[in-house]
Amino acid sequence: MSLAESHLRTVRAVHAGTDDLSALQARKLLDTLAVAAHSRLHAESLRDWRDDRTLAEARALPADVVLTKLLSRVPLLDRGELRARSRDAFTRQVTSFLHYYESSGTTGDPVAAPKAVDDLVVNTMNIGEMWGRILDPSDSALILINGPFAPAGYQFEKVLEYLGVLSMRLWADNVTGDYTRVLRLAADLQANVYVGTASRLLELVHFAVRNGAPPPRFDRLLLMAEQTGESLLRHLEQLTGATAYVASYGSSETGTTAVTCERGRLHLQLQSYLLELHDERGTRLVDGGPDSGELVVTTLDLPARPLVRYRTGDLVQTTGEPCPCGLALPVMRTLGRRQDVVTFGGVNVRQEDFEAELWSGAGGGPIVLDYMLVVRGHEVVCLMTTDQPPSDSWVAATTGRLGSSFAGRRFGIGVVNALPPLATMGSYVGWKLSRMLDLDDARAWSGLPAPIEAALRETLQQVEASTGLRPAHPGGTLTEPERITDES
Ligand SMILES: [Zn+2]
Image (cartoon, rainbow, N blue to C red; front, side, top):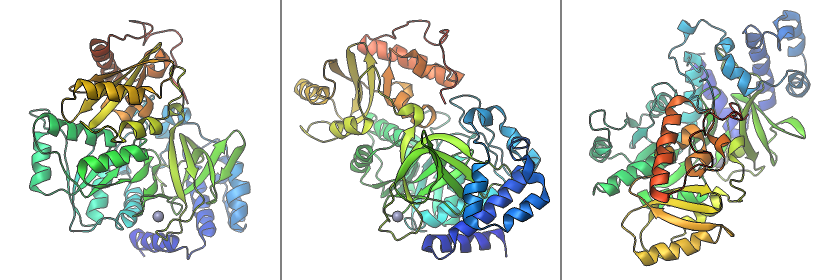
């Protein structure tokens, strides 16, 4: 039986809950330990697993013993360590991979994440068997994911091929540098599915509005890579006429660990990943019950560059509730990156609460397309773009309504033609830095790689020009001695 045939059988059985998932995971875990033990990255932590007798004895043990006792003896793998030594995770020559990719590398050195053919087959089928519940060959999809370096655009293109869906993987025109051609092709080919980030879609809509073109309409939005809350999803649905899904969750280095169903819930792909949750109380296996913590990933279907007990830095929650779609795989929610879940400037503002107010539609008038909050001392300014020029009375009313969240601060609104460049970089820099710029906290921006540092500098200039606000430590913000290079 080919890998594709056997994996399809596995996926369907796991979806239906008819197979013994623990037995499958235990068997795959031991295969993973056996192969990972021969990588340089895991050579020390998995030394014992290079011994055939150890493996043979482990294979005779009950699945739950393998998954709890044996796994818990393996040390956790830190993000910093993988970043420093990502090629050491390879178990094959680099030329035996199919395509070379790296992670976006915004919090340090990019992590090598090439695709091997077996990895590609499994990941494509995992996503495809889920998205196939939402898409069919009559659909036409626009993939708007830049990045020849990272695998996401390529991977989603393969999924659409798997499903027989026409796709176009486009980007800003290389002659004009804008979205005119993207909008023309999306209209010509009747693209009814958008695949990409929320912030990029907002930029596309904004470009259309600013240039007097009809904003693109879609039936379904398959969003990923950013912390996209309920209010933002509803806002995007209103702008585009579509149903919006947080369509997948994962990373270049791990592959796709959760995928949406037709009910808009992310189901963990337990046939290909052994997942644990980690916090101050310890590390425990995801068992489908209600729980939360930092996601720790062991790859079960990535033999060319296996990761064992890899700390992702992402906070997630398992709901413990069965999904009405009927799939047996547990449902999870993302809670953002660890560094995203913080207050800023001493103000406690949740993205979700602020966006709920921003896009409540209360008061009528222009629609706010996108926003960025800027904080400096007691000043909070919300830069925003709108679909039509607002009246003074609308600005006054909206300032009053939004400002109530910032008690004790001076709150203002700045309606601008375009947001600073950082606002579109949520998938690279994380939600907090792309939507909330705290000018008092230089540490939040430190350690950014050069291209994003350039975007940050331009952002600071634009913010100062439109609000008069400057960083607390002008000039020296990025080279201060207390600069932090690794926040994980
Ligand atoms: Zn579901």
